[in-house]
Length: 296
Ligand SMILES: Nc1ncnc2c1ncn2[C@@H]1O[C@H](COP(=O)(O)OP(=O)(O)O)[C@@H](O)[C@H]1O
Ligand SMILES: [Mg+2]
Image (cartoon, rainbow, N blue to C red):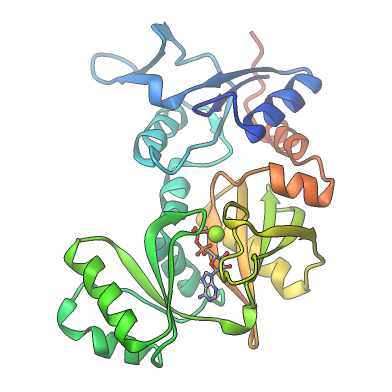
């Protein structure tokens, strides 16, 4: 097959691993920096150009690895490939859903997937009430579109919660307020789903004096065994967001596992190292099963 890997750089572990495994399995794969793609609409079929070449019909499938900074443009490029009939491991709609935590949690709540009690608002005039609706401090305050643990704040008192929330509202920054799940103890579970199958899962544990378990925040990783309920949540979360490849994050609470977010471009480095699973190969096998079989 001819595969387009939408990624800004070859200098990323996940990108290199996907290229390596695609080539091992005998496919042609090209890294395409979606930030350098140009789409032309109107007068005939839409065309996608890359460094001056028309790549509209070059690929049987695309694998989007869209970073957080250019999600909108990246999703629009994916959309264009989709509209031209190319299989994508992540639909543009799904990328947009996963990008925004409120949007993700709204879908999860509707589908009956357990999540931490979460509230969103923009009204600076009744912040006290908002904090009370969640049962008072401590609360977690999160940027709706944050990532890597940046933009996740623990407010332990009503005073600090109020001033932080007030600041974000006044800055027109979209946030959510969430019950702090203290017993998760700085740990979370990352579950890697590829095509309705769990291929790997790991536990991340935060550094001392840190509640965020993100690897980018110094968290350490180890392989973990999932309960049946955790497996159910991960598979259904990926399905409802509509992602063929997803990194589903859960925390373990007293009342059972709670979904906190779904990542559309989950990293491979930490989880391949922690579990020894060849996840890049799983992704290519998934593309083989679904991509248009069309060899030039
Ligand atoms: N409600 C919560 N209670 C306790 N810890 C949380 C809660 N929400 C997030 N965390 C911790 O903070 C980390 C980052 O939060 P997350 O929502 O995944 O944002 P990001 O997109 O930045 O990774 C999580 O991995 C978890 O360890
Ligand atoms: Mg996270």
